[in-house]
View 1: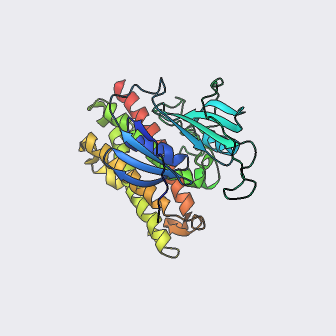
View 2 (view 1 turned 90 degrees about the horizontal axis):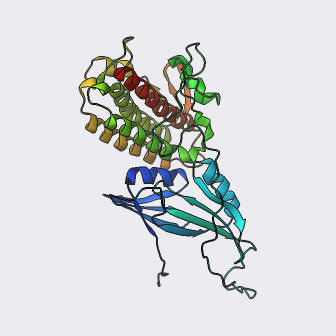
View 3 (view 1 turned 135 degrees about the vertical axis):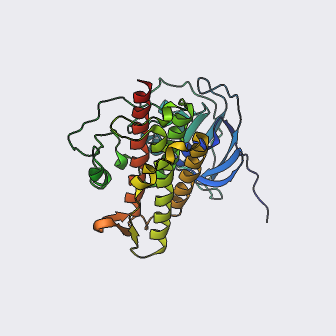
Length: 349
């Protein structure tokens, strides 16, 4: 057998975990992961990510990729809805392609094009490929995107007063309706239903990475300060999210393997109230956050298209599908990251 010769782009990235989460969110599948290096794939197109330090940052383009697809307009709509930056919107080019431009979190430029006229399959009598040069067209003005409140690569969210009227998201008893009833969370502003199911695993990894960076950047004393009302410290919120990721990864795997399992109840309050969480090493917690988010993302990668509705039962007859579990976890990570930021603000006075 003769293998086809294929040129594969290798993009430099400053943070491999963050880059993998970004590309998985856009629909790429993780093929292989090694220390400092990963391979992802989209519809047969392979991409290698190489972690390098001291990159110039996203202020200027560092490298680039050209991707041929069947429908550039459709992919542009999907990618920008998931947070990709619109450098240039889809536009017809004189060399027979319709193209758009975007970039990843490290400033790597992507040009994506589809043929203006459907291509005739190779080997057919009428096949006469147009000779074109996929040179760069002049980019248009920077555009916005229909991203939900979570912005990839950003550790900051809009600071707003959290309601205390019992509306969705402001009390623990109302957290399940936030995801089950397509409600926005009044406590953190996030809408867990705003992402397709296939993007949830990558989004969890990205949000867990942002929470970890928040903890690493914080003062080691401030990160351990509890609120005067007894609310958790930023580190305790991080430990809770770390543990929650493991619990739900196991629940998702069980629900895939068993018919309607009984999941029981995890006493997350007791896991924190013994005070040991606040004595944890911050760097170790952050490492575990990333590792556990990866495990949950991998569990979700195993979910087939017909499996998202597989169900399980939690305490008091609460019914969870796999998709609902994934959205519930994503909301937990986002909400507790907001809690951790609030705890750090209080600690700083």
